[in-house]
Amino acid sequence: MKKIAILTSGGDAPGMNCAIRSVVRVASNNNIEVTGVGYGYQGLIEKDFKKIGPRDVSNIISRGGTILKTARSEDFFKKDIRKKSYENLVTECIEALVVIGGNGSYKGALSLHNDFNLPVVGIPGTIDNDINGTQRTLGFDTALNTAMDAIDKVKDTATSMDRIFLIEVMGRDSGSIAVYASLAGGAEDVIIPQEDKDVGQIIEKIKEARSKGKRSWIIIIAEGAGGADLFAHRFKKFMSDIRITVIGHTQRGGAASVFDRFLGAVMGKEAVDALLRNEKASAIGWLDDRAYSYPLQEAVKPKKEDFTYLLELIKMLT
Ligand code: F6P
Image (cartoon, rainbow, N blue to C red; front, side, top):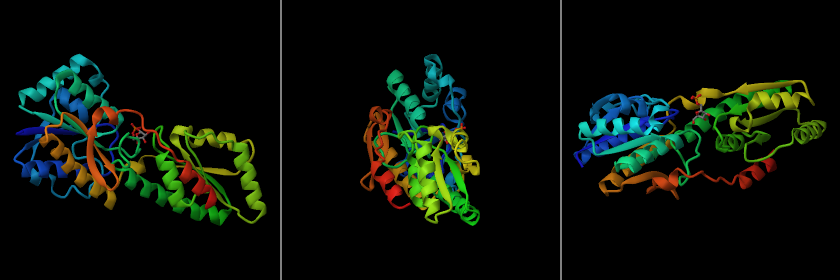
């Protein structure tokens, strides 16, 4: 293999740059040239190509976002447009594609492989931690740290003023950020799409706790459960003095955490290794403390997460 391309697609995630750096340098060590594609699949369609060498990725390890830029391309779902993208790769003698992104980006890579037999490999880059076959995705740990920091700060004011706060975290349909951030931030309750919660019962719990001297209460709400506004409306039927904080896109920014930098490095290497092993459509995962490659076909299936243990623990620690 002499030449590969790399792109980042969908929502950016801290650690994407670390993975790009690793892919470029590991490829270079194996005498493989790397073409960077701008703006995800849109750049494949528009031939936004640029050669990136080992020195072009200097000092990006500590930068948030993605140096390649990213986008969500609706056009890429059309087969004739995908064909044009494939032809653009062929014209440049590019033999394989590394895609860093989430579930939608993986589906794009799989269609490119299925339609034209192009070797592809996916690196899970999304703060949502919702890709099947991997315990961790790039960006999740950093996003969690950002969410935890926000929860700590809200807690200071909630405690000082004996208030109840609803804090909305990102995560699309996944409850991962909500559950892990609740545990790490010492939240009193968490509402995720995977579990029905009765607002009336939460209010009863708060009232009971207040009668015993616990005055403030933090409830984390996953955006996929309906978001803080919806729940504020429900809570306010029982209790009017409630405040809302939406952490929002801060969870996507910032320098990657130690773990995400580490993950970027090892997953980038594993991605190049998978191509060198002649694998045709793989995804890179993190399982039992190591990076491994597995079929992309598996990775695009919905991830089933069982949060029972952690949810019980959050209750126990309240
Ligand atoms: O998938 C990453 C993510 O940040 C989700 O958590 C969130 O639902 C979505 O992207 C937001 O997308 P956008 O930045 O396009 O509004």
